[in-house]
Image 1 (tube, rainbow, N blue to C red):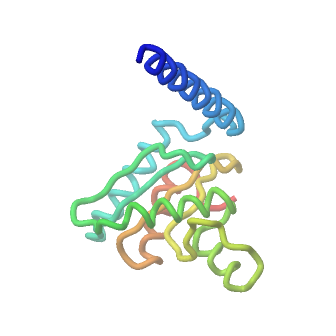
Image 2: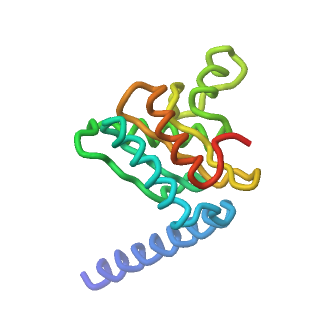
Length: 163
């Protein structure tokens, strides 16, 4: 019995060490995050203020250029699935460098292949500061073009939505 416990403990320790080393390797593939908490806060506050002004109940997600979440806000009344859509919009923005709407247009035209887990409608935009993409802001909860308006308001508070 002691041998079984020791064997299970040994296997658990090896598994944990493997996971830690894998996470370290994966983390090294990403470049350092360019989206700071302060920048995300300024962008989020502007996007949320715009949404409140329009009385739109949305979810807003800000990521860094590696698609790591930096900030999320879900305004009261935003639908339950809005987080999933905002996440999928940010994914295509960071992977393609395009707005999610432009990405969708290019996929439909056959110019780009679909990104697994992405969506092809508007609402996600890149955030550029000094000509460099530092992340994405994606909104979901109203019509796609309205989602994009919220995202643009956030991006423009700290930089721009286009290069």
